[in-house]
Length: 118
Image (cartoon, rainbow, N blue to C red; front, side, top):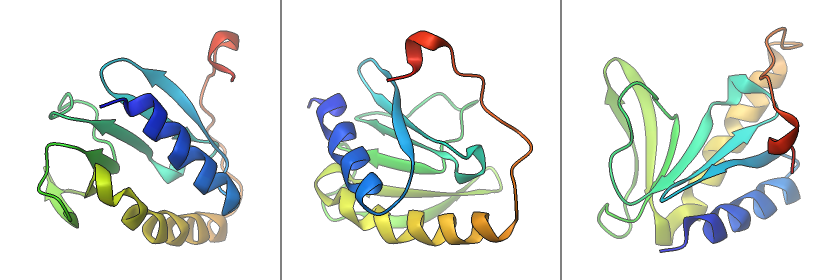
């Protein structure tokens, strides 16, 4: 599966909903970051990611079709959706965006190298 192509679809849809995000990296998996780091990030892939990176949002092709639910992993909540059901993640991200906006200005920023700014 071409996860970069799917990531671009997700980004396009999120931007339509007013969520600022961008493709951070694409290898066998693809990674989406939000402008506000308190939003978490999205990993799209077909296998478990590295355990040290706890992505809040996960779109996986190796999960059962129709899968869309929260899992508590190592004390943190993570949302997982099957790649064919990626749209199910949107209401949760929009809810997170509303919550984050209520917290006020974010004092912590991602460092983004020039070559990553697409």
